Length: 334
Ligand SMILES: [Zn+2]
Ligand SMILES: [Zn+2]
Image 1: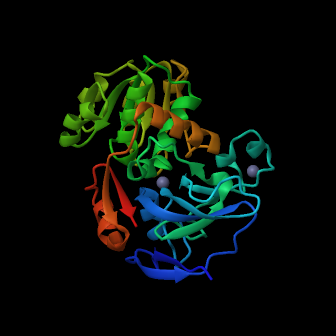
Image 2: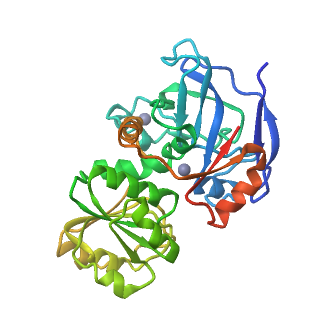
């Protein structure tokens, strides 16, 4: 009998404690992954804290998983010993219009890796191989783990909106998601501008691939960017001065949210009409987008900047993420 050794929160906001469970039988399409690395995403903290009222306990977080396949179901197309990754999504119906069109991340019956299921803060996981992605050999396991959620979250909208070489792109918030956006944009040949509230990150933005850095707490600096950007990617889950940011977009420019600000977005309609600006959101990425992102990252050397900590030190690692002290993504190792 297989027993999974994991770390779980037993109630909202609790520290994580060692927790063992017996996994479900290996289904036709399932694989069992021996986990070597798992990133800590802000969504994991929201789940631990039950911020979205969707958490059930015991809760094993973790959805930026890298490991090696230890067992395969009889219909799996993957093989034992393959190095693979898993992101936010663990299943979809594979039958609806959205699934058939390759938008499984929008399937109404989709399930998340660690919502109602045990996630990757563990030594192993069993999961549908249609949401398990072989990793190109060029990618290092620790720095690839954050690509599975954070990476595709910023990569997918850049592709969907046709952001091309030479485009002027602003990235609001330079953290786990934002630093990956700067690296992808540099590799795509775009001109990236970092908007950040931290003076030390302004200095670092150039190293991460930005050509420019603007203080997001200085309205005058933001206003000075008027009519500059083709695309603005907002990774900051904060209420911002949206009107001023919209004015930094060129006509036909797009403001895309990948972090959820609290409350309502209050935007005068005229701001959208007069220059045909678009405000939109984006939610992780489809399996096809994840595969394309991993190939692109391997070809262009895009990887997350990580701190690592042993899985056993998970509570200290979670605390560093909570305190925004990680540059730029925390990854647990087994
Ligand atoms: Zn995530
Ligand atoms: Zn579906």
